[in-house]
Length: 349
Ligand code: KG4
Ligand code: ZN
Image (tube, rainbow, N blue to C red):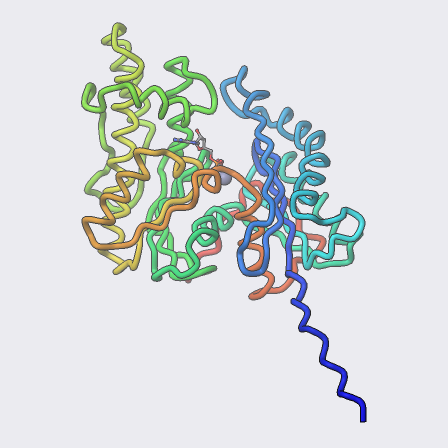
């Protein structure tokens, strides 16, 4: 009698991986993320050096730079994830379809469709704003819904009650400039360079946030935001006191933005009975804003779900995370999906 052949050791199922591309503005980015939200690789090539001389993003330069940089960004992303370009074994390819700059969006979107066709896998078109809202989910698996999110970037400033992935209620939004736009404009006015957010934060670290009493627009009034009066107040204050230190102006401006955003998120949390507070978008990388929201959360006994600083500014890991959820809920996107520079967040009725 022969002994039964031992069963082969169970082989681990191959990881389910998705490639995301992001080219909506001035970061050329790609990432490979697993179905369980593990970021296998994430590469971001920032074009800020190209746009800095102009004090803001120049759409034609952005589109051209995406075209030039995307192949190398893609190669590095696949290589770091240990995948071959010829047969990476990915489950889907996703890209940002909007909102953003048309010429910039088209580069990533066309590339993702071409790769999906070449590799014979589904294509997923992702809303950039929804991508930002998924950034916190990469670092926090179990959120206590609903969470109130301040989605504050260079192009948008929204206060959103997120009841779960895909379930968004808009509580308020900026009536004029986006928060990041205000950082960029004030930095340009002070001669601090581009992008303005990090430059203001650096200068503010050596300044006095009480040096100037800048306005906190609509602080006690609903959930809408306004930053253009603050920007004008900075210009007026510096004209009246030309000897003022940039550091003090930057610190006072930053404090005004932080105070308004934190106050609105806290009040919104009370109104919707939030289980947590959250930040998203480039401005969410701001250290004093993060610290102030953490302190507010501690005071309220609410968890604060912050994306890592690098996942606040534009990246493709957040696009891939949103794409995984979308693929599961709604399935692939048609290859005919076009770029939409004005795409809005799909809101609950
Ligand atoms: O999300 P993002 O990378 O691109 C858009 O979707 O717009 O956000 C870019 C914006 C810029 O306005 C930039 O100045 C701002 O985020 N930002 C910051 C910081 N880092 C980036 N604002 C304040 N503090 C920062 N550390
Ligand atoms: Zn963004």
